[in-house]
Length: 69
View (cartoon, rainbow, N blue to C red):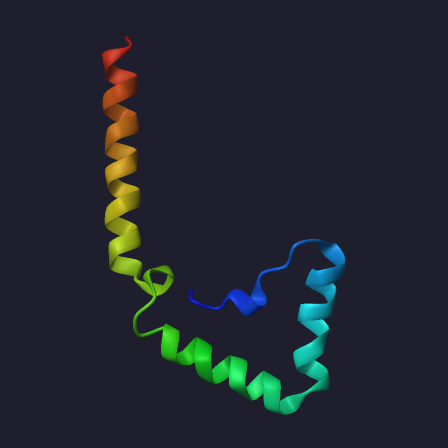
């Protein structure tokens, strides 16, 4: 997603990263703005691409299962 500032190394860091933006409205607004911008280009939000990849995986699984019978 291009937002490494949201990656947490452990539970304590995760809690801190989840709470910090709530305590800092400017930081929260910045994160929201960056996320909105990423939605236009990040593969995570490309649902058509994700669907094609998932369908291809299902097709491959079916082919593998069929060849083992």
